[in-house]
Length: 185
Ligand SMILES: C[S@@+](CC[C@H](N)C(=O)[O-])C[C@H]1O[C@@H](n2cnc3c(N)ncnc32)[C@H](O)[C@@H]1O
Image (cartoon, rainbow, N blue to C red):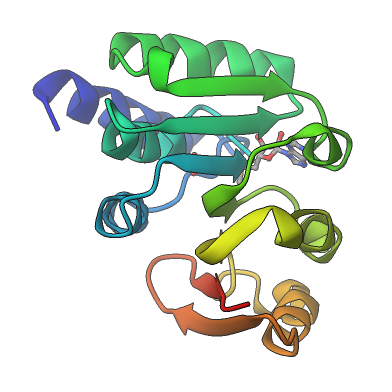
C-alpha cells in the first residue's frame, strides 16, 4: 500500500475515534480480507455496509487490476465520503458502489461471487445470507463481522450458517471477530 492509501486509512481511523457513526473494521481485519482475496485469486467480490470506505479500500486494493468489488451502502452521505476516499486512493475504478438496502439490491445481482463481506446490521445477516448463498461460487467465502464485539446479536447467524449443509464455518478471532463460511457444494 502506498503512502496516500495509508494516510486515508489513518484519517478514517482518527475520525472514528471521535465519531460514533463510522464503525470501521480493524487494520488487521482489513489485511486479512485483502489476503483472502489475493490467496483465493478472487475476481468478483461483494461488500454489504461501506460506511466511509475503510474495509472497501483494503478489498479494492487487493482487487486492483484483477477484479471488481460491488459495495452496497444505504446511507447516501456515507457513499459520498467513501467515494472521495476511494478516489484519493485511486481505487474508484475497482468499486461499483450501489446506494440502497442490501435486501433490495442483492436479488437484482446476476454475478457469482468469490468473497462476500457482510458488515451492515447484525440482525440482517441471516436474511442476507439466504438471499446470497446461491450467488457464492463453490469454495467461495462469506465473511461476517462482529462475532466477538456483538456476540449475542450474532449468535443466531452463527448457528444458522454452521448448520447449513452447503457451508463449513469457522470463527476467526481477529478484531471484532469474523465468521468465515466456505461454500463446499
Ligand atoms: C459497521 S458500518 C460498515 C463499516 C465498514 N465495513 C468499514 O469497515 O469501514 C455499517 C454500515 O452499513 C450500512 N447499512 C446498514 N444496514 C444496511 C442495509 N440493509 N443495506 C445497506 N447498508 C446498510 C450503514 O449505513 C453503515 O454505514
